[in-house]
Each structure stands twice: as structure tokens, then as C-alpha cells.
Amino acid sequence: MRWLMDWLHNFMAGRRGMDQLSFALLLCYLLLALLSRIFWLLYLPLGLLSLVPLAFALFRTLSRDLARRSAENEWFLQRLRKGAAWFRTQQMKFRDRKTHRYFKCPNCSNTLRVPKGKGKICITCPVCRKEFIRKT
Ligand SMILES: [Zn+2]
Image 1 (cartoon, protein in one colour):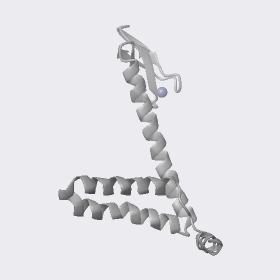
Image 2 (tube, rainbow, N blue to C red; image 1 turned 45 degrees about the vertical axis):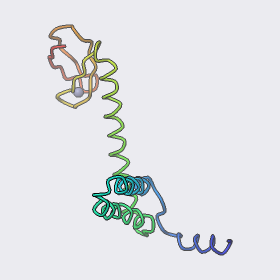
Image 3 (spheres, rainbow, N blue to C red; image 1 turned 90 degrees about the horizontal axis):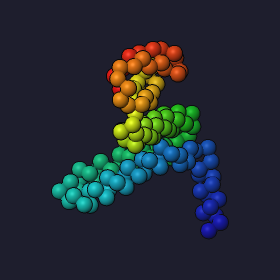
């Protein structure tokens, strides 16, 4: 078993290995492969489609172009963080739907939370100090 570990260690030297994007691609492959088994009419198209993220994950894991793979992963993580932030905002909006309203600053697009039922009020953005009038 030792020789196998040594060989693998040498083989992976200087290569990217797994990162978050490759992991997400593998999950994508598993999901598509699972769906192709559930919907048997789509077995072939989904089965073939599932090979795309699998091939890309394999290519990225074995790639020696570390700078480019790193940039791809960073791009992916940025999208992931944005998505998570959007989801958190939706959760907060739902939680406060009876007591507060949410507005976007027209200047810096920062999200602002304002108490509901105060009529027309002037809102000052705490980030950029822009004032705008909204009905709450
Ligand atoms: Zn603002």
C-alpha cells in the first residue's frame, strides 16, 4: 500500500487537487446522475449531461495551472457568498414582514430596514448619507 501512496503523492505534486468548486461540480454530477436514474425517460440525456461537471471537476483537480484554477475557485466562492447573503436577507424580510419594510438605497444599493406604518418618511442611508422618501 505504501508504494501506491508514494505514487499518488508524486502524481499529485504540483497539481491543484480538490477545492470548493471541484467539490460543487462533483455534487452537481451526483445530482444529475441520481435524477437520470429517477426519470428513466431522461436517463441518456441526463446521464450524458452529468459527465460534463464530472469531467470539469477531474480536469480542475489534475490541472497544473494553479493560478487559473485558483481564480475560478475565487469567482465561485464570491458567487456563493453573494447567494448566501441574498438568502439571509430574504429570511430577515420574511421574519420582519409584519413590523418592518426593507428598501434599497438608490445611491449605493445598501439594504435598509425601516419600521412599518409610519407613512411617508425621509430615509437616510447610514452608509452614503443619501436621503430618499418612501412610504412605509
Ligand atoms: Zn446608500
